[in-house]
Length: 399
Image 1 (cartoon, rainbow, N blue to C red):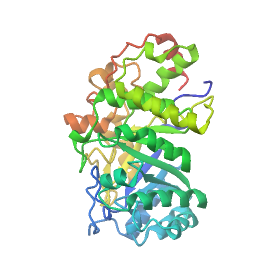
Image 2 (image 1 turned 45 degrees about the vertical axis):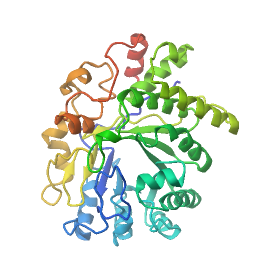
Image 3 (image 1 turned 180 degrees about the horizontal axis):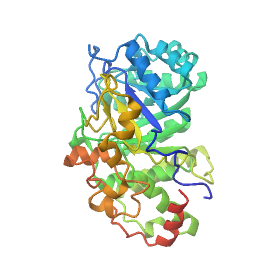
Image 4 (image 1 turned 120 degrees about the vertical axis):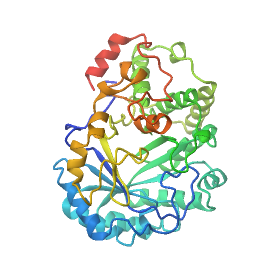
């Protein structure tokens, strides 16, 4: 693989984020098991109103070029009557925008076309099971699977870029190859496996074990030879990509270097059977390499009330856009600056040779220890144990 394995934004992340997510509302007609926002059907009366939301978009524009990617999420952003007016205003400002709707009756062809017409370039949808029984049980609303897959196909037909998100839990761990099969069938720009952070309705007992997460990351690397795959809140996937790429280049058997949980072989073998049945050739390169951003480090989350957080899974506010510019908060907040300084990471993360391109999930560290700079609780790698350190150093210098 001659291309860079870990993509870096082409500017200083101390100056501007790569991605900004705004929780437009926490109103949603789903009741998902893992919901960070603990969504309900009605709007919060204290959400940013239309003019305040326009001011937020202006603050995003003031970061300058290249402007951050701006994502309208929720709850369900379709529950906001002014969504399309805000998209139009963002388009006037020259923003690159995406929308993350829910799989509800509001996910219609008309609304998807309006996203594109009013300036949205992409959407993300969540699929958490390969069948209606599995997905709808997770989302807690009958019919969500059909609405989501129909919206998926319509978005592709309309020409919207599409990211598929899957939250990995004990409920769907063994179903991941079947979801991979759906991604092959319907097509998507990227499949993102989200590693649960126990906040909101997300429960620690719903998580798979650290060893199983490691297995999933190796499974995703195998999938990336056929589709674009990445993780959310699974930052050590970037470590796995570098490790596996080095072994691939040397023609070495990965099983000789990793003691993986048995679930890896179950997932991999099912995935290989699927691509074999479909006659798919393996790509020479992985489709889309991971982007090196993390909570507060190239990434920022704004709540429905305008509070600014390093991520939606780290409830540590550094201020509010009603009182202070988002630019100033991102650039100057001590918490954000600490999160951008890899030398401040503690425990094994601070000792790890991958710290500059991984850093672990700061959100999970905070959720499980109360310390956003603590070691990633779900990483099983022992710093310095990968045998090809010279080759790794060369890779790291090329990121």
